[in-house]
Length: 470
Image 1 (cartoon, rainbow, N blue to C red):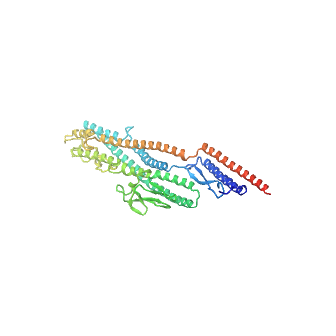
Image 2 (cartoon, helix red, strand yellow; image 1 turned 30 degrees about the vertical axis):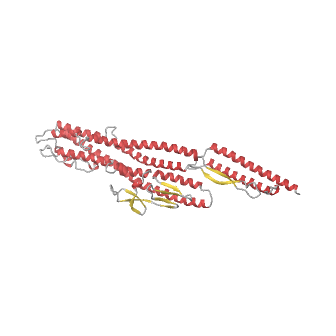
Image 3 (cartoon, rainbow, N blue to C red; image 1 turned 90 degrees about the horizontal axis):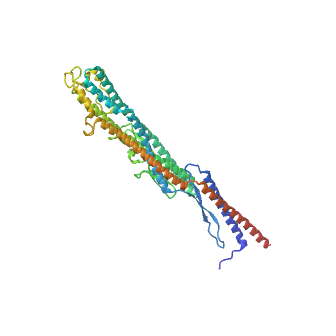
């Protein structure tokens, strides 16, 4: 038969039980106060105490209660979803902001764009065909040709400016990535040390979670948490960025970019030959790279399409112009200087210096038939494999920009909505609810008061037993 629980022997254990209960509830009250104090702190994750029995001892009913752990209330799967949406949003926001600028460059709303200048250019040739010897018509044609060349040059220059701005952003974004990776590695080290000492690392984990969110806005990544609490980060192709307290650094190098040697490429520091531009597929960095190298640059990019249109106009007009005769009865020369890029489009020096060198005639008799032929190029199917006019091709080009901008805006709006929903869900799980904390506060205060009362009763019983033994 087990031993009897004698009153005198167990008064001390009751006092210890009461004391431990007071300590546990006091810790819970302090934790509740911390939650309430941080209700408006960005990135704060509420914490809750996990009460647990302290076990039993021989001859005693139990050792009481204690705080086994302070739990950080969060959903790791939800955090991954949020960071994925932040990467997607960063990607589309970077493209959207630049596409808004590009839409302004090719805005045709006020009849001040390429389409309007192109129409005026064809109209001027038609007017010249009616009065091929008239100086007024020739001056008007020269003016409209200058305007057309100028709008192509300025459009190309402004598009180049957007592309160069995107290139300039890359270095700053890489610096941000390096800063986040370094700070995460430092926090990994601190968290591992705290975990070894059985201390609370929740505040450090909150800071790390905020850094992971900031990193996700700049670039996409995968991550996992190891047994010592460190978050290891790597690119989608498996290349490691952070391992424990070690962070890999990224760098930018120039001189090797296929389109423009002045453009920078993203590499791992110390591995300048291994370009990782294509490995980064999400976040602002990927958005800027895609804008620079695919939307604006590249074989099918905006710049290439603008160049192709300018070159086609120059070559087609020159081809006809060189077959006609000017006012001196000489074969026409080039009307535009031959170009390979829209940024170089200009009227030839001969035409600039003497409008009588404009070839309007198909014969030496001075008719306006050639001018009429050039004017008729407005309707000629010379683009896109002989299926589109110059105007059609430009309209398709502008439509492509508009569609890309619309897609980026729609994607950005959708991802903002999804991110808001996920953030609201996280707030319901990890955020501080004042009402809930006040309920907890009352519960812990009641527990503390009961433990204090138990302590008083135990002391009174002990005093009574001592008095009886005298």
